[in-house]
Image 1: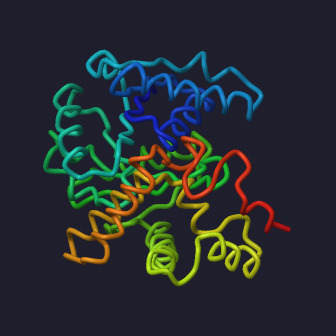
Image 2: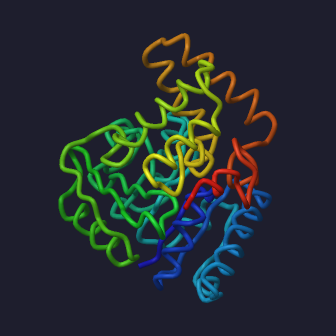
Length: 284
């Protein structure tokens, strides 16, 4: 099987590395050479972490979408969490590849039915969602929609196993899948405490880490997920609910983090600075 991973930020770069590490040939697509360079930097880090360069033999990098999508079997879309952007991108992908090619989305919050209308032959489309970091939280959530072919659903379940993930089969569409349906309210609670001025982010994380004996608190998780993704989630929810406080929060995230290039772990700074974030001192 030949796989294409479209979008290689923090999670997309992990997905492409893990698929190649599992022995599959992987085409990596990013919008330009600069973005591809960042992906290659991520892969170099993973190479050092895993002490192997073998996946590089299976990884091929493209800034040209048409060339990247030639002669492939499975597409994993992992572009930013923006509904209009995803719909436009998936529509273009489905017109390039043949109608029997499986197309999946790694969307964190959108359901397959939010996107299926933009796919030629939507029966071959479903969600394949990974947690972050995927070699620690090694699950893959598989969620179809009302028209997803059950045979294709099962193929994706087997693919997840083949790349070392534990499949989580979701039989009814649920925004946020299983993991994020539990995770996002937790992150929302932490953000509400911080942005309303109840406590600073380090004390919120400290309370969680010390009390629950966890390795990481909510703001460490936010840095790991990435501030762009968090911004999109907050902004989407603000639009859905017309919530003024959430619009204000989205504005603060943009001004205090995105506009300053503080995107989280991927840029070396978000709420914390990396590679040695302050919350590590609370882990015992």
